[in-house]
Image 1: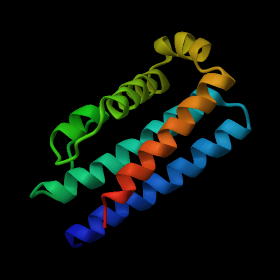
Image 2 (image 1 turned 90 degrees about the vertical axis):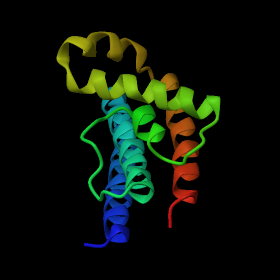
Image 3 (image 1 turned 180 degrees about the vertical axis):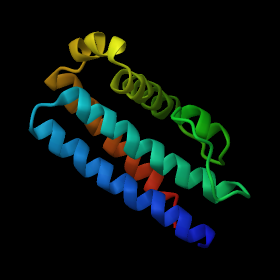
Length: 130
């Protein structure tokens, strides 16, 4: 596979996760929706990591901000805030002991607003990929 093939793989799987996030929101599974929203941004961030680094294999981490720090991306403070918020939902979605607090936070209105912010972030990330 070429570098572009690897980038395309991460972009394609990010799109699948973004569609899943929307489906989960419509079915009122808000915590799961935010978990998949994080996955979509994580995967786009890994596409950027591949684009900007010699290796075609990004690190096996989930922290969006750490991935960005190894790229040429220059997120705004607001975009960094969205990434940081999404990071909390990857942790909360993976570990049951965090889920109770996350379920309380992931209300319909909170999730709707964060998904809109995530969509804006997603568009920005996509605009900087081939």
